[in-house]
Image (cartoon, rainbow, N blue to C red):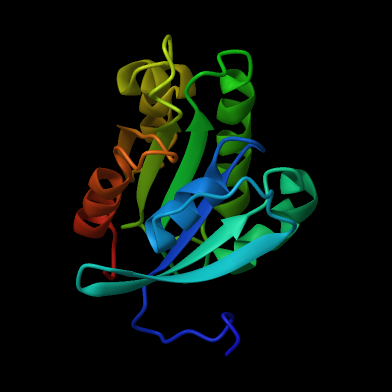
Amino acid sequence: HSPVFFKDNEPKIVLFGLDATGKSSIMHKLKTGDTTNMPTIGFDVERLKYKDSTLVFWEISGQQRYNLLPLWRHYFQEVSGLVLVVDSTDRDRIEEAKDFLNMVIDEIRGSVPDNVAVLVYGNKSEVPGAMSASEISNKLDLASLRQRNWQRNWHVQSSCALCGAGLHEGLDWLLKNAGRM
């Protein structure tokens, strides 16, 4: 069956971030218990059974993020949660991740319901020297987004796609805080 067809009662989660942050690995770890290192081309849609819910994840390619940006407004209309994945070891690109997040927010403003929760996975947290959740929150300047009338629930969760640490905790937070779930 085609993954594009999903039921209205299945919460839609959009998974996004820069390339090579571990989006696909997180998706596959949650779905199968294994990881993958194959980059996503365009976008991938996966149905994930988690606890008492069936979630539909739309994973958007990090490599083609700017080409796809004009289409995002359409993906985000019926969304219940947003998941940004950042590489917590990559201090050189955290500013780029912040700029990208701000660009996405500007692009989807008005298309996303007010009660959408935003989970940030600080992936690769098992690597020595990785940024903590609070450091990621500061570097992404999440507090300033609230001042720009982006009144969403935010949570930064340290995670490890390879071993699974933090993934379920993040998803639990998202299920508890996202709208329409």
